[in-house]
Image (cartoon, rainbow, N blue to C red):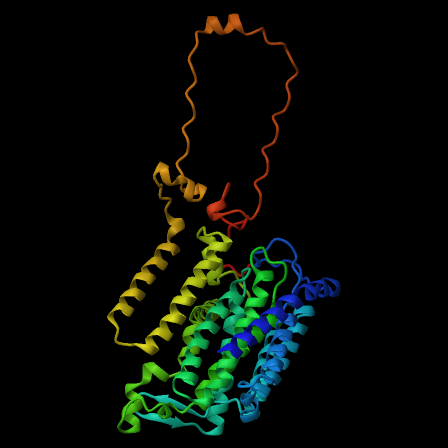
Length: 450
């Protein structure tokens, strides 16, 4: 565990220190595209943050290769090299897209090529644990197609959710933390060395996100761009593929009896193929909804619009920070809930906790729909929008004769135009709203492509 934590800290430190120079380089290189209609930010912001994240990835793998215990991962497995090869290709494609722009179909082809490079070097799915049947071996073509599909889906799910400051990096960090707990339990708890590469990938991914998040939190000073979002999506998918294709479920020997009975009884504990889908459940749902929405309107599935989940949260009145925190909450609930279920699937308290937390999440989602008022004594601890408005002081009535006697006669002055009202600062909404609650100056329908 100490070596994993050391690798995580080194990756985070390298990523954090590289992001500042990368930001200056992005500004000098002109990687600051104009604000599009679907963007939420109001000022041009440099991209290419993926360069710093890729540097952290390389530093983490380099350090891990020289540590006492983790170096065995590089000696017994070719998966770290496969990850580095695929990450290098997807990162280079993302850099080109951030600077000059790349067609959506070309990016899709590049993602498939990066996944194919990892498959050629051994990072592929070899079998699937099927309930009631047992481990089902896959042919090379079946394993390749399933691996490429999982990589492409994960990359695009993370890329689609990268729409608010700190959203993608925070959600992937939560997913990586949950995946690290799961993979470390398989590696350390059951002594399966085949799970060590996936554990290392999760630790490196956490470091990349934690190192970049301080620069990307609202208000963001730099965006990761496609070079970063596709990179972290590929690393997350690589960890899921590694633990799915290389770890034999029956090697855990949790139950005696036939292989079929063991697989059927221990599905909640070790089935790893569904775990990456749960840790990216929110981005995956956003991806599916976007494809259905765009194809229903007769558009390309890759056509950009303002119908993503984070856009909808802003439209109903949530502030930027609150929308990001809500997405964090749901990601953590689903990811860590899946990990907890894999440990104990029969606990009543676990189900009750999930139900209670889901209720809390629904209340947070519906919060802008109503404006509750708190007691006077609690107003100092809540945002201004929940405080009672102070009543205007009553004017003391005075006789008209007394007012005329005490006040001097008014001097005739030329009429002056009334001063124009001060403009409302843009970008304030939610708990900090002093004007319209909408973040967008011109309200548009959610399904509008603009």
